[in-house]
Length: 287
Image (cartoon, rainbow, N blue to C red; front, side, top):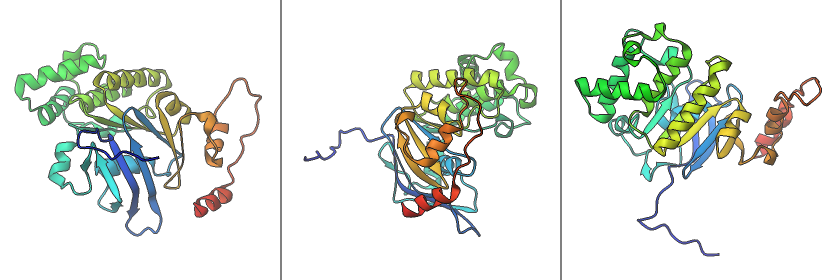
């Protein structure tokens, strides 16, 4: 079968990454080891336990790794643009406006000495070119869009004066105010009470659909990610061990282990199976 060549008019994928690796100084272990990601449009989930490298992938895509980390890849393209050859000035123009990262905990992401209104208005200024009253009005409109009540009052508050759920709404407002083409959400609900997690995810889902943005959702919760995303990449020790469209397709022992640990009211209470780490490592060594 002959595969037609892409023409200049063909729409490039949102994200095309090949053989991404991240290493840290004084460490022989690769935090990310040969990861391939392809996202034409829609939603991609990345799941794995703590230390699997999933958050490092998100930061590498945004070029927000610490100085001690070094990222390499054979290919890293965003909407056809070569990210590997992009300078820091070009990346600064990209961040927030075309690619956004929603961090895990708003308590550490928001500036504690600046009001909510100032921070959202600053995002409007940086990414939309608005100033003064126009930036404040855009900030107020976006805060209303993320279902924050009494917006004018909230804009004068500081991060320590609002709840975690409201803080995450503020972060979503800041990161989506420019209608980015790609949103990377790194554990966006893990720091929140169970009662507000579904509400925040519903809001994120609604905004991503409304803005026609692509989404990468990073989480340890495989069931939540599978219900939210078109495709799920499962990471173990820095590698993507399996990519599936449906949990029923899971074949890798690690993915099956994650699924077996999920609570099921219909299943009798039993001891959780302990993953055979040695066997998993042997499988990875063979891949």
